[in-house]
Length: 260
Figure 1 (cartoon, rainbow, N blue to C red):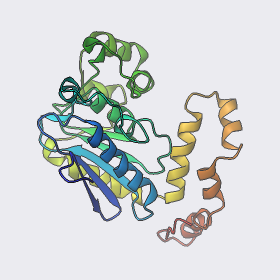
Figure 2 (cartoon, helix red, strand yellow):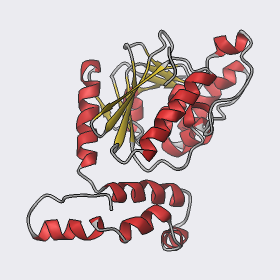
Figure 3 (cartoon, rainbow, N blue to C red):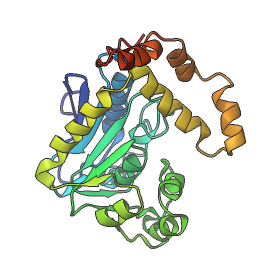
Figure 4 (cartoon, rainbow, N blue to C red):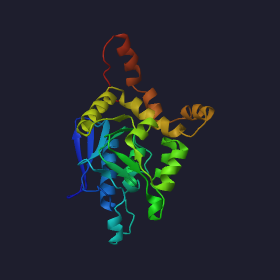
């Protein structure tokens, strides 16, 4: 990351921990967006890394998304990195991203959570998409991902009125996996990451790939797509790990994954 970056990145063994660190709002300008995208690329390309945890410092804000103060001050460019604002236009991640939402997630902060694999949140957390009340729409994926991750009418209400979604509502709608006390967020996120790491890495990559590819398809089209030649799924099927799992089960031992 660049010196003075708004994004802190640290490898904790196979877990890449990404922390938004630009209080009070953890808002993203162009450089911060590029730094976050670089961290996600590191996750994707480093074979030693298996999963990411994304959180923010403090307990008040997760992220306010786009830094409107920077825009008002004249930062009008959109050089957010090769995968768009906050890396939200990337479709190649082969490793899960857990967001540990410590505070208010609005705009791009909510959009990032909508695009994460798993979401855990503190009880006081709220999510919001206030873009329409600012004169624009959430174009970094939030508009359609909200309608996919939440009931359609609820997503439309949030977008049209700007009202916030509570953590408990998010859990009831299946968007939030768990609600845990603020001081346990990272502990629980690391426990979840540890459980993910017990799965075969190539199988995890195949799961993420197939899920993306068949998300909006019918059952018939989904079966056709999965057998049509998907790179991560094909690598999994041809791997040594594909045989190691059944072997370990038969021998009553823990599997020894090689990622090959």
